[in-house]
Image (cartoon, rainbow over all chains, first blue to last red; front, side, top):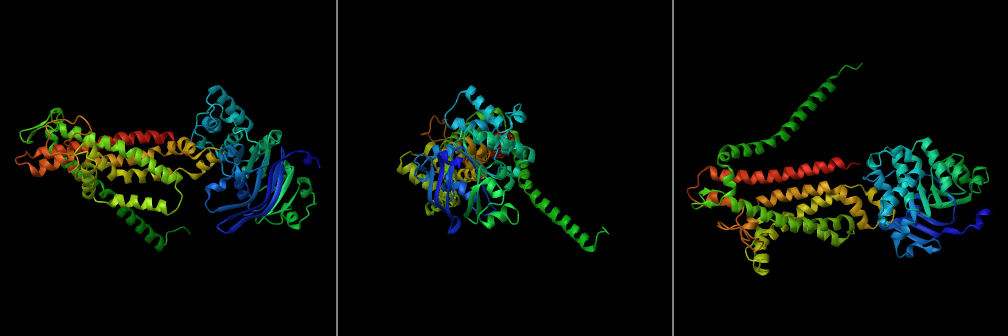
Length: 256
Length: 289
């Protein structure tokens, strides 16, 4: 397969996640290649969000969350990264509910650059415009960059969140059901953006819309009750070639 | 079909009654404030003048102004603020943003609650023992302000912690996700949005420390002093103690003098509160989510 020529960006080995003894992810193995859009589908409670949180070590902020197993980012175990802030800055995350920080639109997008120590106005301007443009938000906010990010509409805030994630210039972009708060037209625009971004970064797309996975993902994994039931070329999953009947049922909308 | 049934009418009557009751109870709160203020203005308003504020007491404190007490209270409050605000905010930031949920943290929280419950006279004696005698600050503004600061610290800590906690957790996570450290997150996202609540804590503290008498009377405030305080090691007169003194300790004080002193004391607190509230509204108008 063509995929095999690309280097592995993220490798997960025997990942187990539990919350206070309650398993959320059990025994997941998978590897994601560079410049791949990797889709993850599955019903609620399948462990998709926990999976993403383990990758950028957000488990540190949740005392109940326990992570076991290996997560290799660029071949290096994320649990052994000494500078975990550097790790997080290389991974962009977009969660289902948009978070417009209560600062201006401009400051929202410039924040990551400022955290990295960039101070020159011209450079910040450039980053802000580029990221907002890519997130399909520039035209709507270019005349009011000083309004509060938290006062934008839900869909705009989600694109702002995406712009902020892009401003990190991440190697890996993780999107968790980003389209929940976004209207269909905007969703399509963001999807187009993601297709372009693929040439620059690796993308993990967790989605509850199986058709979205079909439109975007090169390969798709089906998670169910904390297990990774199946990983396959996306087209195969949707053309009746799923090897597990549960996957077949899910993509055809018979449950979930 | 939509005619009111007996039950509907009964519910509506109860609703009206309950509402009136609540309004009355809330309205009653205004009453003591009004009575205090009108009494003070009525009985003490006449004595107020620029001279009253800016001259020394004379003739065994039965005449003259209140300048040393007024300046003394300002000294005491400002020095106490300089101590308790940085300390309180730092402690609250630790408790809200860093502290793990373990027995150590619970112990600290317990200490804060207990500190808030300690009667002011006990604080006074502690201040006397610790600052005046043990640290050898003597009876001074420094010792009195330290005592006031310790006494008001719980207010600052609790108010600060609560306003930090009021900043949605999602903001912090979004920031952490970008690779920000805890401190970067606090400085850029949490503190700017908690500042108005923190100010409330400071307002409360100012009002409290300006009016306290017990903690300062053994530690730094004096019955009478012909001198104005020059530094933190000086003793000073203070408004609250002066009010106590002219009301109960000095014979032949004209009736309007204590009322005038009380009016100035309340006026100081009200002015400080209004300035802070105005500042707070200004900040709140700018920050929204």
